[in-house]
Length: 377
Ligand SMILES: Cc1cc2nc3c(=O)[nH]c(=O)nc-3n(C[C@H](O)[C@H](O)[C@H](O)COP(=O)(O)OP(=O)(O)OC[C@H]3O[C@@H](n4cnc5c(N)ncnc54)[C@H](O)[C@@H]3O)c2cc1C
Image (cartoon, helix red, strand yellow):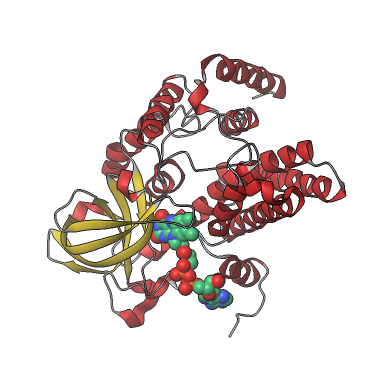
């Protein structure tokens, strides 16, 4: 598609957002991902998501047969860019459907799974959560102990997961479980789609430092999961998990990259000096890197461990911006008012350097798998 046509598309999308975005879908500046707590907001966000889908602004590059438009991936970039530059929520659906479960099913799912789940992810009829981390092991994912026993037509799953974001909103759970022996490590894992309403599943919301119960501990007690819900092959869950983590890091890194830009711009507006301008420069470079990486990934040219770099850089930059803001703006950030977003953002940003792989794990990964450095001991 010629550049002029893309520019026309950008103008059209900008105009569309300005005319159609309801006031409650305007993001507070500098903040990200904190709008899913209020039930009224969740309903409004899902409604907004469906409006976006009907307007052809979600799933632009997804295959037509699964509810997408099969169109140019660059248009997807443009829509996200315009929405975020205007401070508008995009997409509206909570959970990890669009960013993690969708790509996992697109890349590793069978035809029935693609037909059954993908369109409902695009329309937000289903909300998805991710069940990888366990109390014993999250950085060391290959050591997970949740067990899935093969019973012929179905599996019986027992175990305990933790830090499952948005589980309280989800009706599907992308769950990694052990089907082989512990000694097999990553070779003994399988990926499942689990209905969160299945008998034997209970959960306990975990209140975070910011006061919100954004994630849950999930208990699986003899949960029956049909065999058709295995994604990929039995024993190949690691491969599926790595695809999902690569996409997750790219998508989360992207959301962070935009948040870095908006937070840095906002900080420069209220405190313009050499430090804040340097942060803005860094933010612009991160956003450039993200755009290039996303383009390559969507074209299928890369979607490997290098996606960790964008999540690593953007999450650390965001934390740095909040720390700088707090030190420059002083105690006023602790008082409910115009500057309160900064202290709230600071508290929130602690988790950004942990989720989807901590900074240490991502540095190890980039060193070993991308740069080819010797494995750490
Ligand atoms: C906001 C948020 C949302 C999340 N959402 C989800 C979700 O939806 N689903 C899900 O499954 N999980 C989720 N997680 C969990 C997340 O993936 C884990 O917190 C993360 O992988 C770290 O695991 P851990 O907390 O057990 O820390 P640990 O693995 O115990 O690590 C503790 C510390 O040791 C360091 N460390 C560990 N191993 C090494 C090593 N080999 N080399 C160097 N340093 C090391 C780590 O970097 C860290 O600083 C979420 C976490 C957060 C904060």
